[in-house]
Amino acid sequence: MPVVDGTDGVLAAMLAASHRLPPRGIPELVGEAGERLGLSSARVYVADLQQRHLVALPSPEAVRRVADGDGGEAPVQLPVDNSLAGHAYRTETVRVAKPSIAGAPLTGWIPVVDGIGRLGVLRVQAPELDAPLLERCRALADLVAMVLTTKQPYSDDLARTMRTRPMSLQAELLWAFLPPRTIGTDSVTSSAVLEPAYEAGGDAYDHSLSGGMLHLTLLDAMGHDLASGGCSAVALAACRSTRRAGGGLGDIAGEIDRTLEQWIPDRLLTCVIADLDTVTGRLDWVNCGHPPPLLIRDRHIVTGALDGVPHLPLGLTGYDVAPPPVHTAHLEPGDRVLLTTDGVTEARSASGELFGEQRLADIVVRAMVDGFAAPEALRRLVEEIVVHQDQRLHDDATIVLVEWHPRP
Image 1: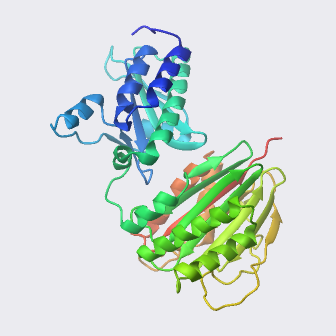
Image 2: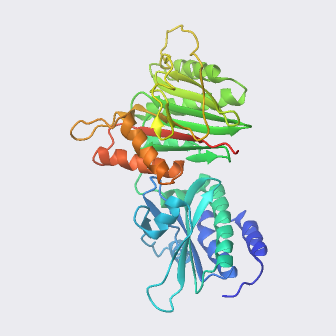
Image 3: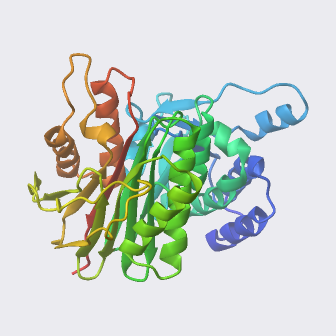
């Protein structure tokens, strides 16, 4: 189909139409924009919650059938680990497949990325996919990422598409409080994963950017029930409230401790709370009864580099103790910092073998050597942990991986 108007005009019209668009209208909007850009078709696939499948948003025809009460269609899924679409998602590169039938259109897979956070892929088809048309497809994929990001927080349609099974009440509570999995700038990337995604109990993470600072929090609340999820959610709220009021690391730990004592007594919580200066590489952190962070430098763990003396866990009512000490280290360009909960290194196989720190670092380093960024390194790491435990996690496993890559 010939291009009706310039790329800028097509994307501007799509953006204007998206403001009042219901989420279920995204597939039709993208398909129409693709045709105006010269494509035969364009369809959006989003990653499921555990990043194991890429799931197509329902086609416009399927949406209309549901609206008319005619039932829906089975979701179209492609494996992340064994498909060309998955390759585009994993490597964040454009992939083009030649047709197996003469005269059939070419199919391209374009990564859909919000900033540096992966959302899915855009499938495009056309008789020819030359460089100028692929460049238009990249622009379309960027706009798709923006539309998905704005619609996702309040769309049950998108939530259902990205889930493979029902979610427990405490997991629903936690996911409502969690930030995007990946954030970053030209100087730093922070990526996180949380498993088991549908039954998470007391683990939670937070990361945010303010000026030249990256803030990190990793929490592990005692138990695996609704109160555990509430404990972590309240702790995240106390952390953000204190941080946004100008409080430091010790202030945040103290506020979490007081809040738990007042509202959720008899619940312990361990945590690492940190600030990274993305300009200088200075890392400050407090550790309240939590496994120490790990420093990976030159493809090796720097043993003991980020240990420090841990403080007591938070929520110990009746304890009158000094504020937690603030530890400091200076990163070198290219350093990675791993924050984990004990469900990672203490994951046991059927034979009782611990997953361990060394295996943890080896998998991250291997992914780095293969050229994968932090989000893909973590996805692979979680898959290894799940396999190690025969597909059944016995404790929450939460990981935050930070890469400091300042510009020269």
